[in-house]
Length: 279
Image 1 (cartoon, helix red, strand yellow):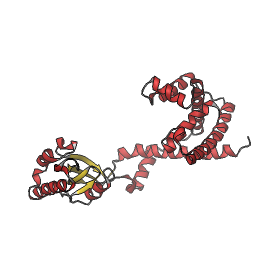
Image 2 (image 1 turned 90 degrees about the vertical axis):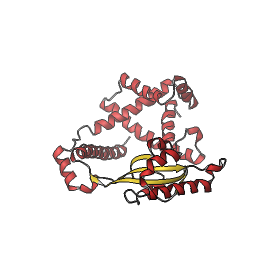
Image 3 (image 1 turned 180 degrees about the vertical axis):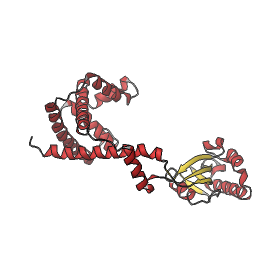
Image 4 (image 1 turned 120 degrees about the vertical axis):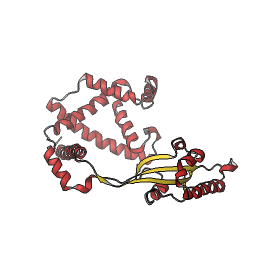
């Protein structure tokens, strides 16, 4: 393996496995080598095209790319140690980055003539596909948390559950006490803000809490819920129904999404054509 190939190996291992190459299992190593072989074969064809088209990398762009790599590390020394661990010296890293930048420049050139949607076309798309532009229902939520701690009698599982059940009973009788009771009893940092979780959409909380919250009526209290944090009592303070995204907010998103889709489609077609050419 050429020294510069250590960099794409490192990136692929991180992107696909969340590990360094040295930490991969035997099966993962095999997968990595296959991915690297495919990537390098495609890269070689693209770089041949770049040479024929007279595309090159400017020194300033290469230095900027090197600076971006270094930013991922705590300091210069950590970066040097990390590079040494994968046997990657500075000239080899620069060569890997040069190749990466060339590929990027070629792919940008392939799609340079694609035109974005006009404002009028984007507005027409918005009007023809209203369901795609609904902002999801959100709920203003607060909670009271009682943790579980086997080393603390006040927080034994049964005791914590009973404490929160008693608090729930008080709130059923006097809902207006939620803020005061949250500040007094909740063991979550949100207690200082009267138990306020905030305005949330589905999928952001623990699954147990999420399912319960989005079944509650407005100003309704949940049953006692269990999560990895402990026992919770949720209050759905207000329901914000799903509403259409405003036109002036949707149009730029439509234009950007369409342009991105068109570029990726053309790049994929071009790569297929390139790989079919004789070497």
